[in-house]
Length: 341
Image (cartoon, rainbow, N blue to C red; front, side, top):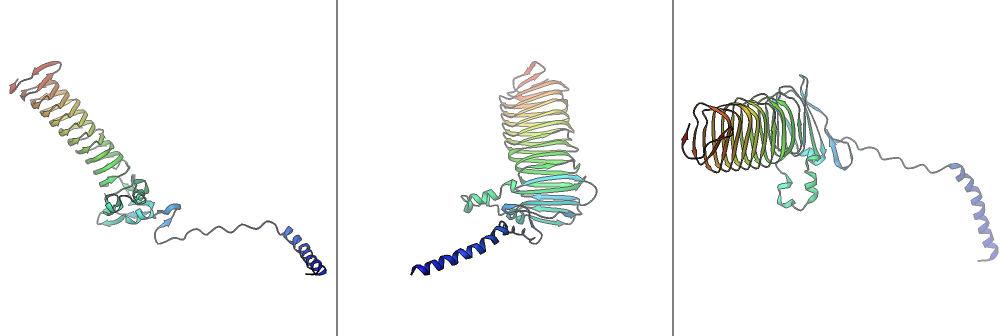
């Protein structure tokens, strides 16, 4: 290329630069791209957060009872006015979609699916599946009228239930539950966990299998079964106590008034602070202990092993059989077989 041609090209470039640069200087910085539009609603489910978290719209149900089955999640039950029950569900979309909600006559039914991947051996090493079925990934919130009957079976996860004053059936495999004042109740814990109940206005049925702990305030008559290393703490019992312990369970009650019938197989322990056991029947097989700080009427005591019974006092006729150590107050009154007093 000749020198004069090169000079012409460079001159053209310089002229173009002089024309373009002033325009760019007055144009200002380039505007950032517009943010993407929010995701649109898909059917009745709305995306609320990142990671597939969804919230279903609140629904109303004119019912007098609620049944919850096989829920792996968190459950909140509050008490509202006299209007319909309301339900809100939130969680990871796959978990929310698996929940079956329907009204069956006078009952609202909420059920988890039976295809729980936690128990499927095909998914034992699929950790993403197990992350999805954690209780924190599904939240169920209910508001019910006072007096509503609740039945909850197969619960895994935390639960809070207010002062419903209605009948309650609560069975959990692993749960930390806080419950207010309810009517007659059945409480069952299979595995580990803790259930706290302020008050039961009526009879109470207790079942503990494993190492769970149940604490209840005042209640009516109690029928309890404890297997394993379970622990029960009860308040004042009005109406009597029927209790069976198999293993090393530990049961304590503030007081009992009414008939008392207890059976211990193993090293379990029962302690009752005060009251009137009318009548009292105690059977011990093993090294269990029964301690009653009240008055026993016509106590009948039997044991096989190294069991121990202590009574503060008794009235009527006392009989004992087997190898049993019996104390009334601080005085040992029987250590032999077939004694009568």
